[in-house]
Image (cartoon, one colour):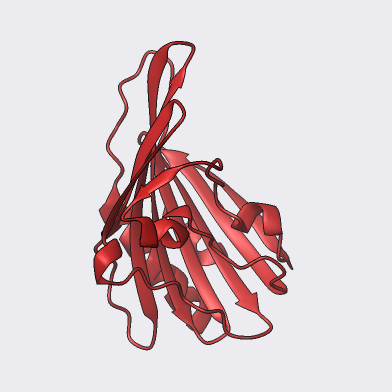
Amino acid sequence: MTTLKSSFGPEFTVSETAKMGIDPQSLAGQKLPDGLTFDPPACAKFAAGQLVPTGTQGNMAAVSAQGEGNRFIVIAVETNSPLPVTEPGPDCQKVTFTGSGMRGLVEIVDAPKIDGTQTLGVHRVLQAMVNNQLRTGETYNYSAHFGVYQVIVSANPLVLPDKPIVPVNTGRARDLLVAGVSAIRS
């Protein structure tokens, strides 16, 4: 993963998490609150999303970078056994959800095709009322699964005071997925 650090220029603040045991907190994803209504209802499990199943054992390493109005996190995971990939299926390409003071959308987006891997791209948007103001957050997650390895790239816009929100550079996020897989294979 260290090789990915050099792909970011001086306009990025880059940090690295060295190889360590899997941290369930960092791989759990953002838990949605209970009581949400999903449309279509059969897609609730996919929409709730989980990067790695609870109890997974193995190692992980990560690189994160902030700059140009975006945050990118690249996580490499090696598990004791291959992980199941949650396939959205044809009916779950776009899922909406609503609940008390919030609503959101989970949709499949194009992910790079990488030989010998199963890839998935997911865009999540969450809107919630906070202090009587509508707040919107979004993230793009791209993942590649191959054997006992998984690469996850998370990309989201930075919310900076007195600056407009910059669209997520999804092209860079997809390129990071390809580079992450290449780094593991080399």
